[in-house]
Amino acid sequence: MNVKTNHRATVFIGGAVGRWRVDAMQAVAGPALASVSRVAVVGDAEHPCAGAWSLTGVPSYVRYVERREREELRALQAPLARAEATCAALIPIRKSEAWWELTQEARRDIFEARSHHIANSMRFLPGIARQLYHSRDLGEPFDFLTWFEFAPAYRAAFEELVCELRSTEEWTFVTREIDIRLLLE
Amino acid sequence: MNVKTNHRATVFIGGAVGRWRVDAMQAVAGPALASVSRVAVVGDAEHPCAGAWSLTGVPSYVRYVERREREELRALQAPLARAEATCAALIPIRKSEAWWELTQEARRDIFEARSHHIANSMRFLPGIARQLYHSRDLGEPFDFLTWFEFAPAYRAAFEELVCELRSTEEWTFVTREIDIRLLLE
Image 1 (cartoon, rainbow over the protein chains, first blue to last red):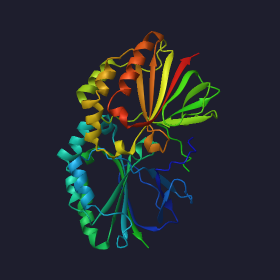
Image 2: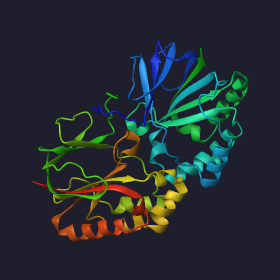
Image 3: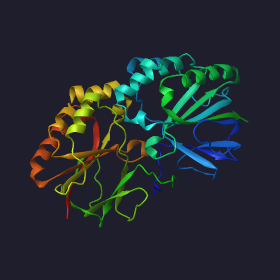
Image 4: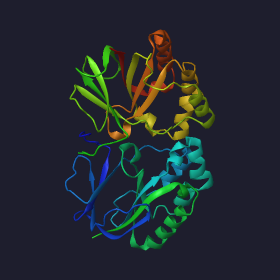
């Protein structure tokens, strides 16, 4: 059992406390997570509260984005924690073993050439800020924790973004997905 | 502090116990690790003994290897724990922030097109078995734990392999490296 602190890690704790109130929670694929009323987002060193569940991820280095795309992303994207971004979504995702058995080039091909993950997401910048956390190597139940923040005016755009992602070839590899909508209140 | 067990993880514990006796330990770059007499290799769930240090890594999915290369590697490579492989090397490595700031394509370009990491290593298969463990996302002091196993007859070949790797462009990004040679006795 690892009792070392992972200073890179962010922990999402579902329970009765935390800045974010749960507005809706839905198991899109695979087993649900226990229903909770609030989510706290903390560093691994803090871990202040017990909850019904906790999910840990690391905002790791880029795996698929190419240089030109990264420059565009950096020019367009918004930071987290903007005052107006009072809506958020935490969408933990697990992909199949078939996905992880693919080589890097095959994953990149499905991710961008055929699913247009980066290009489609870019259309929603800077309104919808996002952060990807990697969990797979931490032995977590999910492979990724995807996090989105936006102002209430972008709610419809966010539905469109999520809908588009779920209709891609990449998403056929998703075996577990929970959609947790949050409000800063 | 994360007290969950990471079932994917392997832990190398340097201390007074363990199957592997330390034959030599050298800090090639950056600060040394405390000298120890033995190394135990355990799963994260076991973690049976306290040591002077412990290093954790995950044998993760492939990051740079392309399909044709992976097929060649799979055809050639030897499994770990062969009876005759009584020599091993544990070489933990940390790479610079400049490396991690590169995009995937730039890292792949340095890794294979310019450093021939895969092609050079393939020459030493199946005599020298190897396993790469990823540590960076675990918040560990090293980014990778590289592990090699070979019969005593391959000692000279292993020196050649290590020498070649250290002379590559990829290795100019290595900021910390410890070379730990082990014997099964």
